[in-house]
Length: 102
Image 1 (tube, rainbow, N blue to C red):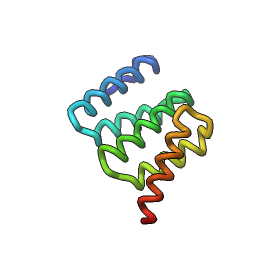
Image 2: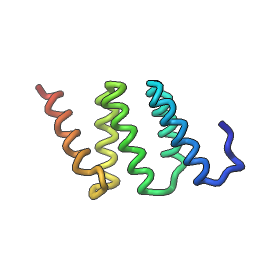
Image 3: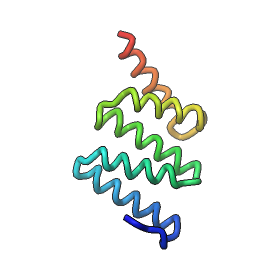
Image 4: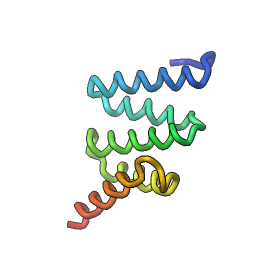
């Protein structure tokens, strides 16, 4: 999807719709790629924090990739220690570490 002629908000909205479509049909890898692309292109810290959270949840719950999910939760906590998802990220990180140590 070439969207160079579109403004950043429109591009972000298109990316969001595309990732929701891929997620809806169960194509989680492609949904994850779309979110990652939007994350990389965004300069909005609030949007980036939410996108990182979305990526971590897809990795943990849909792809079963706890290692990559933990990396995202650690990154979230380092960049947004008081963010909307900080408590949940810390909880999930701690729970996942307890599972690994058992």
